Amino acid sequence: MDELVISGCSVISPFGLGVEAFAAGLASGTRPMSATSGGPYAGACLIPDFDARTVLGAKGTRTMDRATAIAVASVGMLLDTPVTEHPHEVGLVLGTSSGSIQSIMDFTRESLVGDKPYHVDPARFPNTVMNRAAGQSAIWHGLKGPNATVAGGAATGLLALNYATRLLRRGRCKAVLCGAVEEYSEQRGWLAWHAGRREVPPGEGSAIFLLESREDAAAASREPLAAVLGSRFMVHERAVEVPGVLTACVRGLLKDLGLRAEDIGAVLSSGAEGEDAALDAIVGPHAPRRNCREALGDTASAASAFQLAAAVTGGPSGAVTLVTSVDRDGVVGCTALQLERAA
Image (cartoon, rainbow, N blue to C red; front, side, top):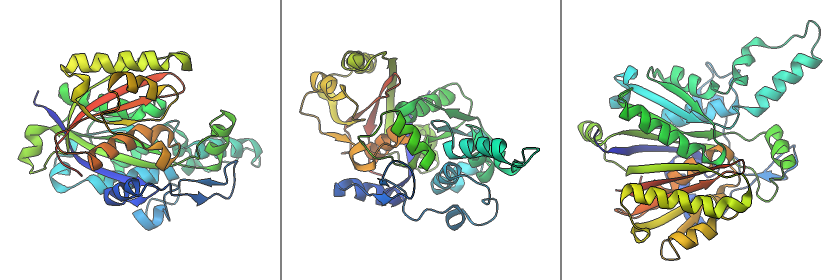
């Protein structure tokens, strides 16, 4: 099959709506913090003034949870006529952690404490399933191709991109929108706190990419942002294994692609413990290294999607960029991109 390229990108982040706001925010070197009204964290990296009705309109948003609204808005920002004129040929692969944690916990509580016979609002039940955001995004925008939800912790964005490449290479569709979404809620904050994730405040947002063949991008007059060279994934059992596992993962990918460590022009890391040690041993200090976690907080399932977005919005043309991710629950992954122009 023709080379696969990322030919579009949309971002909703704590810096605001749009790729421009995201790139400018990362370049500023500041962390956008908002006060929270509940939960263990005094502040979080929240999307400023995001409201489903304001962004999407009143119709169909009354019972929509925050994660779904963010996803629907992100997908809508990316779509254009050449993509959607053949909706059966456009797939959607969306990454998430557990769907909307707030919706799941609120619905469960309502079923336990509500008046007998345990009255719940049935209109809110769809928000409790993990594929709600992906399904609603496809329905909202009329996409009728393959629809999948992927969950893999911090590496979810890379896993979603890899899943999308497999759909295209097997001829399941002509183009795929792929990425990840995460919402902040008091409930998610407490879960993260009790899991020991206290060193970095929570964040939220979404990054979505348009993946297609270079030939199809050229036919639609879409200029590629980056070529997707490949991905590789492994697992670790204990934190002490991270440097060795990530080193093997990256070196295996470079060998598959016929690249040397010196060919890597930039690295987007996830900031996990042991990650820098592995990268120091592989690519050394010559490749500029960035960590989105410092700017965006702990964005959970959207973390590596934001790393990919940072790569395609701020890297030098022609550079091979390595995106690495280490999740605390065991997933280790890396993806290599060849940048062509900034988004």
